[in-house]
Each structure stands twice: as C-alpha cells, then as structure tokens.
Length: 293
Image 1 (cartoon, one colour):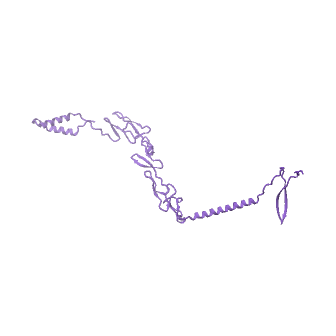
Image 2 (image 1 turned 45 degrees about the vertical axis):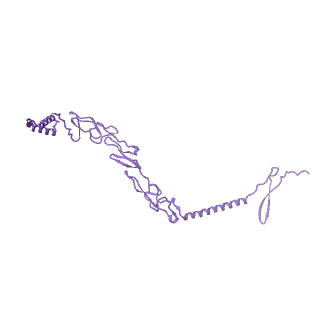
Image 3 (image 1 turned 180 degrees about the vertical axis):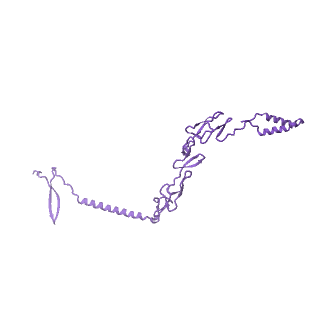
C-alpha cells in the first residue's frame, strides 16, 4: 500500500506556495511560514492503518484470513501463504472467527458461590454456570449465574404463595385465622377441625390442631374417654377380687408328717343331709411303740 500525505500537510504546503511570491517583501511572518511548510514536507510519511475486509485481521502490512470458531492462529499469513490454524486444546475455546494466537480458558464455576456447570465448555463455547437443585440464581451475570442461594422453606403454619424459579425465591404466607398447615411447603391451609364444638382455641394462629388448648371447658371426647377409662378400671378390679376369693376357698392345707417319717392318711366319709365332705385325718404309724410302764 502506497503512503498517503495527510490532508493537513497538503494544506500547509499549498499555503506556503501561495505566499512564495511575497517572500521577497521581507515580511518576517511570511518567512516563518515558509520555514514551517518546509519542516512539514520534509517529515517522514506515515502509513495509515490497514483497512482489512470482513473475515480478515491485520498483522504487520498484511490482512490475514481469520481462523474459525474452535481454532486459533498457529502461523500468520504472508505474501505467499495463508493463515495456519489449529484446534483449541481441552478446557480452552474460541467462540467466533478470530486472529488469536491463544485460545481462551474455559470458565470455572465457583463452588463457594454454590455454582455448578449448567452448560459444559466445548472448543466453541464457554462454560455456563447455574444452580444445583434446591437453589436459585441470586445474581445473574452476562455469561451465566454468578451466585446461587438456597430456596426459603415455608414451614408449618404457612403456605407457599409463589413458587420459586431459577432466578427468584419461594414466597411464603401465613395461614389465615381458623386454618393451619401441618407440613413444610404446603400449598394450601386447611380449616381447623371442629374447634368450637370441642371447646378448643388456637394457641397460635396457623399452628396444627395438635397445638390447640382448652379454654374454660373440657372437650366432649375427653369426658367420654375419662368415663370409659374409669369403668374399665372398676371391672378389672372386680374380676381380680373374685379370682382371689375363689383361690382362698379352694385352698387345702398340707398334711403334717409323723415323727417316724412315714405318712399315713385316712379318709373319713360322713354323710350329712345328702352332702359329702372330705376331711383329712392324721394317724400314728402302726409300728410305733408304746412307752414302757
């Protein structure tokens, strides 16, 4: 490309030429103007920047063809050869036509910010970071999520007003008076089961019915339960008493042994008014000796 004289320098040269005829008048201003014009003309010319076309990049005095996405420049073009390109290695990429001598490094997802790879890096695309299950993106950058936060849990006594998305948190709402929720992340609140009929009131709005307390009254179910419990205890006590009394009535005392160590029993039957009674009788052994006189 041929060097071009800047427009400002050309204007100064023309002005100098216009006043050449007036230099003989001895005007100092014109003399200085001539000197300035000569200085500019004698300065080395500068080459303007190369105006490369689409798909080319400037390198020295040449416009070289760019490498495609996924490739990088291995050797720049010359007057006799085109650009030499090679693929990006693992964990590097170029996502558009380029004249780069080195591929870009793939982005690493920061575990401290609860980030995980949502789109894996390839030779033509950078990593896109996202959030793991149970998290939402708190700060979204130009190349993916930059910070993830755990979803808020709606505890018992509340309900989910708005379900969280990839970029928004769950929104919880307290159960209205007279209703409750007994589990985490409930999407509705149920009415209290018969609190007025049983004389129960809420200890705290939205809490489960198990947390209700009695106010100046006893529930009907509690009264019935107490009566049934007392009746069962009374029946059990009566059965135990009858069983112990029969056991004492049928008890037979053990028979005593004789001095000689032999056991003799006699059974005497007596019939009185048609009843039969068995009476144990103790007798002395037949081999016992009478005392000497």
